Figure (cartoon, rainbow, N blue to C red):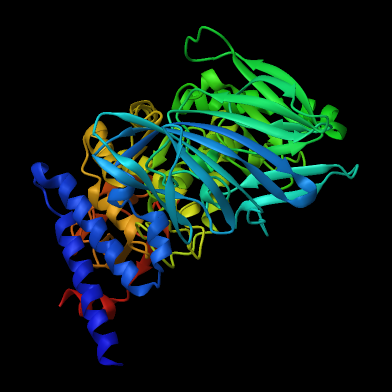
Length: 583
């Protein structure tokens, strides 16, 4: 081992030790600072092992050139030219001034042309730096004021090789040979096509989209359709309006030979003044199929309203739009490409999962992709809750156990901060995250409290950004439990906690069990249920040190640890192993 490698090994373990110690801190006053420090150390540790370019930081890091202004509104005009795979248009960016500044950073991929930028009716200068542009407004703006830029752009945006995973535009043809265009850019970011402030932490308060498409096609975007008009003999413009906050990666562009199907949903658990408008934009040949298949949208909305509260973007309506890729959670315009098929639990995975993101991801949004678990873990768990609501708890357990097979435990769920991190090698933020939440439900062991906590989380942070620190602090306060070490274990340690035990026959016709937690963060004390008495589950609280309990039966085969509530590793020790670890 080289000296550098050995030094890094020491540094890595030192960081882990510091994190574990801090996460054991009991002082309420420093609780949120403890978490912040822990995650920063962890992120630094990961970053040291991974190579990133300065351009990763230009997109992922909030520098003074980005924090000096806050986005209020995007007014986008976009012309889509399918035969050239080209787009062009403008973005009027309205912002508030958070700190005095004269220069700011906008984001747009270098493959796109930044044609010109206007401020106060005058053309201003800018300097391109790969996927960033430094704009000099020519005057200093003061904190508390507001401004508006008009940015013209054009070019051939990146083509997605496998949307939605690698991101970009999808240029396809439908079965009749007509153009069929979609966009999915969560990973690479909206700056792959749109000049904007491309950071999750800054959502526009509202948006207008003027989508210009060939006259024989339909253009669909987020929010409500305000009208359409011919702008030339060849092109028609569709005007869409979003009145809620929206993240840039959720801005949707869809072009195709669409037919609109309209429906309504009436809230079941909350009083709303008007029904929720449902619109489905599907390819002309699929209208009858869609009318039947999309009836399950009502079942999805009912289940999620029960568990998470009313659909968060009621004013903008709910849409499904058929796309030439599998699906994506575009806000109020969910991309659907699952070929009208249900799974063995009789629901369409794309409808349920991507719509679940309307609550977790679109309404309640992480500030950095490093914390994307907030989007995916809750949404993946929402699938099981959908099954539970309509088919019962036992069926939901079967669904959860199918998810469990996909867990790898190869790297932490928390990613690397400030670099727009999407380089995860597994799907643990989905499936392990879902089981983490199911395990937490078992730890709380009070379904009334559990479901009220989840719903209150959605309501408290509705249409807001949230960090892991804020989420954990909320869960601690709402449940009255210290869950800090629980989240530390499952989010930033790759391995699962190990329940180690040894059962011994002491010769008195009863059994004695030694047990403890191993391979866990310091202070980890998650309770579990096991059979101390035959046929009855009782709760014990293992810790790092060994504990003893009498088992009131004679056959070791009768011992069980509750198999349906916890995501843990279990290791039965031999007598020799037990003595070695005890001494």
